[in-house]
Length: 396
Ligand SMILES: *Cc1c(COP(=O)(O)O)cnc(C)c1O
Image (cartoon, rainbow, N blue to C red):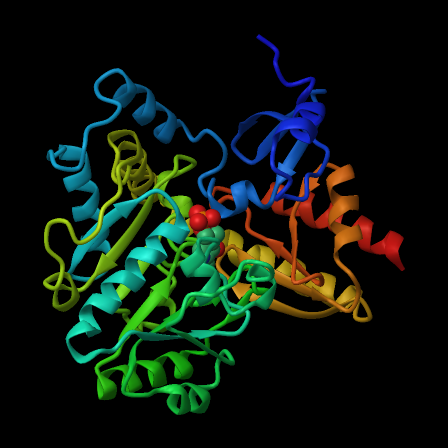
C-alpha cells in the first residue's frame, strides 16, 4: 500500500509544526542510503540524527526485532525478562560497575540521571546541577532547564529550578559555581547540537578532581557520543575520565527507541521500588535491538572501522579546509563525529547538499555536522566530500 504521496498536505493539516520540514518524503532506507517516494537516493551522513549508527535497517537489528516480535512485544517492568537483564549486563560490563535504568529517549535518560543525582544529595539538601553553555540535553521541562541554550526555553516558563549554567571548558567557572547546594556536574563529552565542541581532557580531569573534593556526581550525557560514535564505545573513554552517571539513547537501539541511565552503586543504593519508573522502558523489542547493536559492534569490528574511516574523513575534511580557507574556519571532532565551522550561514549549504543527494546537518547556524553511520566505506566518504566540495565551489 502506498500511503506517502499526500504526506506534505497531511503534515500541514494534522501534525504540530515543531520541526523544520525539508519537503522530502522518505520511503525506505538501507545502510548508508535513504530513498524518497520518487525514488531519489540520498547518501545519509546524518542518519536519524545519530540514531541509525549502524546504517538504516541493519540486518542484525532487523532480524532481532522480527524474531522478538513473534515472541513477546511488551510486559510490565514488575516482571523479569531475560532480554532486559542481558542488556543491562552488557552495558555495565562495557562501561563501569553500577546499575541501569531503562527508558525510551535521551531526554528521559537524562531526567533519570538528574533524579538519581537529586536523590543522592537529598539527605544534605543538595540538588543543584552545574551544566554548560551550548549544551543540549533534551526537550522535557527538566531538560530545557538543564540545556545551556536560551532558545529551547523561550515561551515555556517558568523554568525548573536547580540548574546553574557556566561556560564550557572553563574549570574556574565551575569551581566558582559550586555551593553547598551543588550535587552534580552534567555535560556531553563532545557537545553535539552545540556545534561539535570537545571537552578538553584536562578540563575533564579537573572536573573529576572537583567532584571528588566536593562529593559531586559527574554526569555524562552520552546520548549522542555513545555506542562507538567517537571511536571509543563511550565518549568518556577518549579522555579516560569515568563518570558516576551516564545517559545513553539514540544509537543504543539501532533505530528502535530506547534510553538507558547507568549509575554507580553509591547512587543506585539510594533508589528503591517506586522511586522511578517508565511503562515502556526496557521493553523486550527495545532490548532485543540494543543487544543486536552490541553484537554488531563487537562481531563486525565496528570500532576498527570508525578508527579507519574517521581518520580518512578527517583527512578529506582537512584538505577541504585548506582548499576553502575563507569559508571554513575550524574543523572539530573525533571518530565519526565532525563539525565543520563556517564563516557563513550553513543552511544554504545544507539545502544544496540535500538537492544533490547528500544529507548532512547544520547546527548553531554555521557548523556543518557530519555523523555518518559507523559502517561507512571510503568510497562513501569520497562521495560525500565530493558533493560538499561542489557545493562550496558554487558558493565562492
Ligand atoms: C538528542 C540528544 C538528547 C535528546 O534525546 P531525545 O531522544 O530527543 O530525547 C539529549 N542529549 C543529547 C546529547 C542529544 O544529542
